[in-house]
Length: 248
Image (cartoon, rainbow, N blue to C red; front, side, top):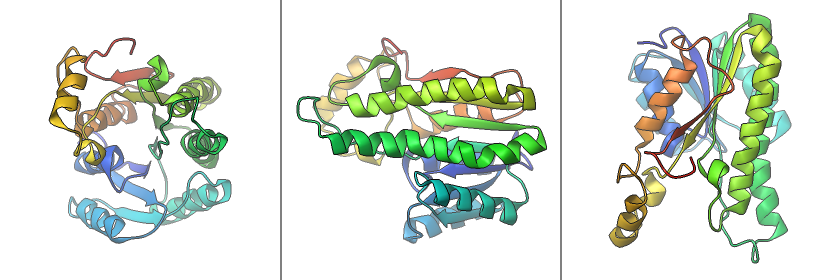
């Protein structure tokens, strides 16, 4: 258990990649605080699932793209858990459209949530990690932020911005042994891909050298590595998890 006795905050952990990260962290002995916009049945179920692995786990209702809510969330987690060693910024949305049809609101909303949540949560956790003299921040980017993608200019821009933000934070925080890295998933099977027709799935997979989509747990395992003490000298890295996709 390489995260034994550590505590992590994982945003957007009630489903998909965030849920897989929280689950993998708990299996590695990590206490997990996670959040969603509302405390609903999904959050309660994830909370119970994590607690069944004999770690401390708690879900919180918080909009982490809101500056004050992020501040309050982190303060409450520190009060409840005592300390935080790891932050995984996973919360994000899409609002796909060709640029010629994309509205200003679609651009603004995606940037506000995807980049804004990373800023707000990093800003909230930084004083705590700075004071304790260690920490690992793992931001979930995307290969789209490296290579771009049709009909995702807003999403690609937000994920590219996360890379620049992370690299800047890595330089600022390194003196206090706080590492900041980015995991950039490619095409990953989640609940959102379950209804994709097989023919379209096969077409997409044919463009991946490994000829298959990734799994959420494969992304989570990369996050475990970057969050752990196995890589104390790794910071400012962008790690594609994409099966060798072109331009990643």
